[in-house]
Structures are given as C-alpha cells and as structure tokens.
Length: 296
Image (cartoon, rainbow, N blue to C red; front, side):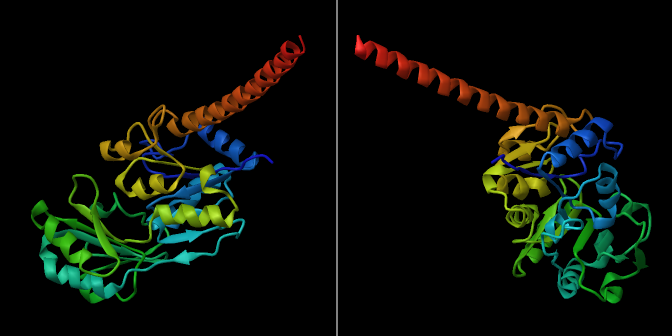
C-alpha cells in the first residue's frame, strides 16, 4: 500500500514570503502532493479568518490548527472533531492588575468573532487581522466579558519580562512566551500547542506518526517540530529552532523553501526505494552465484 504523509506547515516566515504571498510554484506543488494522497495541514498562530484566504487560494482540503493549536478543525473533510481551548478571562485580568495597565503599550484578546484591545491603533496591525471581527477598545479589565482563544501583551519595556512570566506560570496549565527579543508576549496552554494538534490530525486521518513532516520558523513551532517524525526548520528560522530540528530547509521563505524541501524529501524517498530495489537484485544475484558455486 502506498504511504500517505501528513505535512503540517506554519504560515508566516514559512509558507508565506516576506510580502505575505505564496508563489505559484509552491501552490501547485502543495496541491500536487494533496492530489497524490497526502494530507496538507496548516498550523499557525493566526486566527482562522487570516488563514482561510490562503487555504482557499491553494485549494487545500486538509485540517487547520489556528491560534497555535488552541483551535483545531477540519473544514472540508470533517474527519477531525473541532477543538476549542479558551483562556479564563479572570487570569488575564489578574495579570494586568499585577503588572499595572500603564506598563503595557497594548493588550489584545481574541475569539473568532470579537477582539478586545487596550488601544485600537497601528500597534495592533503587526499582531491582529482586523478584517471580519468586532473590535472593542478600552481597559481590558473592565471590558473583557468572554474567555478568549488568545491573549497578547505588548510591554513598554523589558522591565517586567520576568514578572509577567512568573505570574503566568503560577496558574495551572498556563505559560507565557516572548516573541524573540521583542516586548511582545502571549499566554498559552502548556498542553495545547501545534504539536498536540498534529497528533490529533494524524490520528483522525489514520496516518502513522512515522509519516508526519512539519516545517516552521519560530519559537511557537518548537512543539510542532518535536511532535513530527521529520521536523524541518526554515533556513530563515531562529537559531534555537534550527538547533532542535531534524533538518534545515534548502532555501528560505522568500525562495520557495517549503516547495524545494518537500520536493527534495520526496526525491530522497524515491532514491531510497530505488536503492532498496537494487539491493534486492544484488542479493538475489549473489544468492544465485552461491548456488552455482556450491554445485561446482
């Protein structure tokens, strides 16, 4: 029986180039892999509304993990039961009160339909996709009236880095991670991530973990790469992620790194099959020669 693979792809810095576009060659190759029986999954920190335009552009039909795995769904095939994880709003409010609202440049909490922000200004453009969502602006402690999928804090400086992490980890099953060297950090569930999502996806589609591949570029992809049998860090990935990956992509996200790496892996697989077949012929030939020698 032909092997099927689950290929989980991060978006920003991986599938998307720096212009937030996907090349024609990459789109065509991903669709080719899907038509060949493989499952192409998206695993992103983005909300669903910021994933679907690309998903539809490629013509994918596989599962999606958004909000870094807090929401996992299978919009087309429906093989995977939708999973939703939400952060208790009271935890968010307590963190704000302990740090002090004046020490934040911005705070953003989001569900699939609503977003609560401290300031509705340009500072949220780097983190939020405002299209198709209701924006509520004001003191989060006062206006947040629903448990969100994600909570992002932008501190004014690094003075409170250690404190906010310590406070977050004091709550059961909650963690806090910074985005590189920036003052931006997000809350997350310790047992809910892209890695747990790829496990659910593989199980739903009947794919052995030995046939899973994941490609990413940032800290929130660490669990994803660890969970996959073959974890690939993009050439443009952080040094930390590269050190943990099984391999590094052939090119970066601006030069079709995903397409070229997957194509190379497929060729390596075909070469391995060819070598195995050659090996079988050699063994048969040697066995035949041994019989002849024994007869003489």
